[in-house]
Amino acid sequence: MCWSYGVIVAISMTSVLAGCAAGGNGERAPLVAGTGAPVIIPGGPGDAGRTAEPGERLGVSEARVSAADVRFAEGMIPHHRQALEMAALVAPRSASAALRTLADRITAAQRPEIAAMSSWLKAVGRPPEGHADHTVTLEQMNRLRAARGAAFDELFLTLMITHHEEAMTMARRQLQDGTDRAMLSTAKDVLSGQGIEIARMRRLLRG
Image 1 (cartoon, helix red, strand yellow):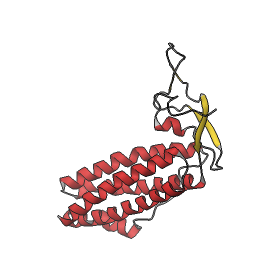
Image 2 (cartoon, rainbow, N blue to C red):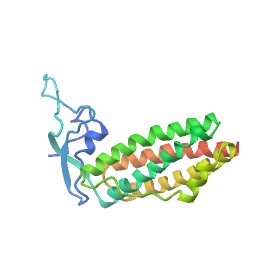
Image 3 (cartoon, rainbow, N blue to C red):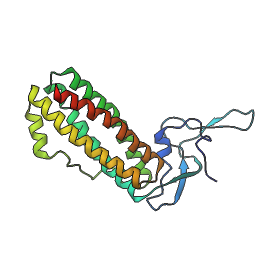
Image 4 (cartoon, rainbow, N blue to C red):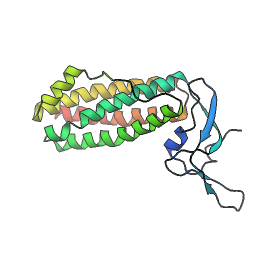
């Protein structure tokens, strides 16, 4: 018997991820309570609900995990990490308040997504480490590290726009080929959030 969205009243994404995986074989997987936000299980009519214990099996997930879901998470985690590395360069190198705000937003959005996708990969038995992202090359990163002021701002925006565009390509591929609800939701968030940020960065480049 599958659990519908309404059965679990309050559940964090990390709690869902702990159990909605099937190792990429397309089978349904156990839905297991995680260690993040509490999972509240409703009681019978007139009865109070209860909090599930970490590791407690709650039923079977309706989601089916595919190879496309795994590829998306394995690719997006290092991609996000490179974006965080670039964003961390802004404060000591740029005097632009708008660019610092953008860097803060990138960090605030992508760090939790890294954590969620890492938990998801662990649940499907795939290590979240061992992958690299080369959207921005080592040479480009070194140029960015060496730049200061207006030169840094222009290079950062140019490289980050390209970086975001690659993330959106990955997200569109996931929406086309993926099956897992959590990864599909993450892909939609990437498309929405990074699309908005690309528009902001283009306006900043135009000055």
